[in-house]
Amino acid sequence: MSVTTFYLMIGALLASVFLFFKPIKVDIAETGELAQIELDRFVVHEVVPAGVKTILAGAHAKRFEDRYEVQELNLTDRSETHVENMQAKSGIYREPLISLRDDVRYARDDGITFETDSADYNQTSGEMKTNGPFVLWQAHDRIDGTDLVYNTKTGEVAARRIIGNYFMKDEK
Image (cartoon, rainbow, N blue to C red; front, side, top):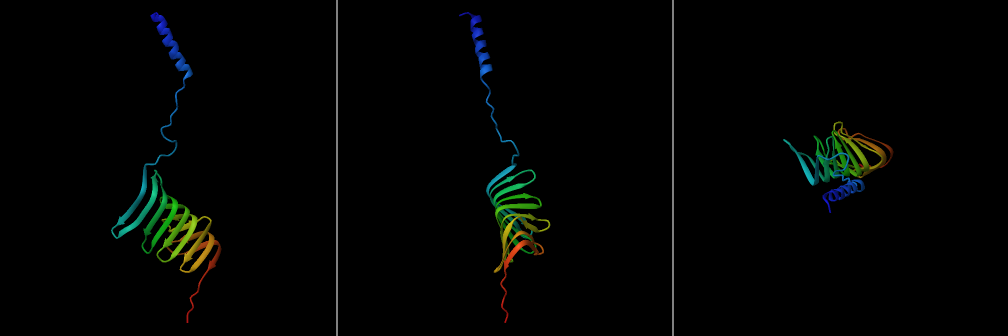
């Protein structure tokens, strides 16, 4: 075999590879937003001179540039007058708003508790709003309704379509 034939065969082989084989496209990362930090099974304590102010626990958290996303959120906050606890299957914290979704539970040390499917809490105003049905308890009293607006600073409650069971104390 001559050298010219050898080079022609190699050229034909390379041309066929170039024409018939296509490169494989590989995506190294998903398109979209990428979390800056991810945590699993975590507890964060915010300590101030007076003691522990906030405890945030969760199963999984992602920190993005403008928000935190937490799964199995459990947040305990000690304000000036009360200790509050909020739990939800998922939550998004975008300062000063906390959006809670799926199986939301709120409890306060003075006995007020409520459950709903979704709630938005504004830390600045202290206002908690639910979207849809809720159940609120205070001691033996129960209120069912929709679209609760509860101010954690003043204790004011407003809602729509409420049905309540209120037990009065018998004074003798």
